[in-house]
Image 1 (cartoon, rainbow, N blue to C red):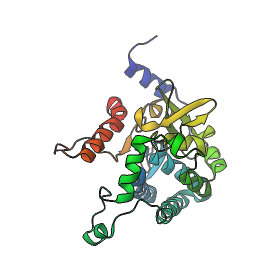
Image 2: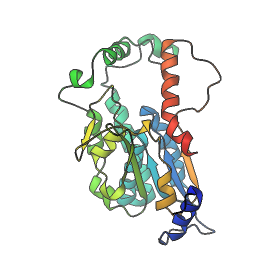
Image 3: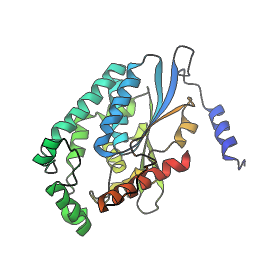
Length: 276
């Protein structure tokens, strides 16, 4: 057995079956890696919209975590429904639905924030209250019925039967196995709403998602997102990483919230940094 991972990866790429979607002089194939980042996934929508607008580019594979996983399945659903235009429209509809649902969220900016143009929630009383509750009680205590309006919205917006039958793009959605601490990659033919929600399951906010007897948390702990499936499952070699969490910050965090935010950024970049 060849112990050199680079040679093994190259051999796997050479042995992959031809699909007819290989890059040509007129069309460039790429793989797209989508980080998670909550509502910041709307920025990823903008990137995907531009890529889908470009006729010279086709997307061979998409790997997504958390919000990135949601963008991935929305694209696949849209491609099946109406090609690239359908995918762009599906992204538009999904994120506008998210925005509309956010109108009813108790976690909002204060009137002073609105006047001053501040989008930070650090001074929001409701945000501070929920943040404190998360430190005192688990989601099993705070939300025993395990209600998740985001799951309802996802099921409403995405036809997962279409996603599973989509042969226009390969999908990889990752989650973290709670018991083993290992990454789990779900692929397009098996993807369900629960798998996407597992990829987006922040353990202080939601109960672990059970799939086939295993419990899963947010995929960002182990891969945000994972890149290795591209080497073994996709023909294209180029990868476009749509990054939400900054790798580097020049200023040292000083406040408690800044320290927590930076710790989260480092944690959720860890898996990606190792693969790069």
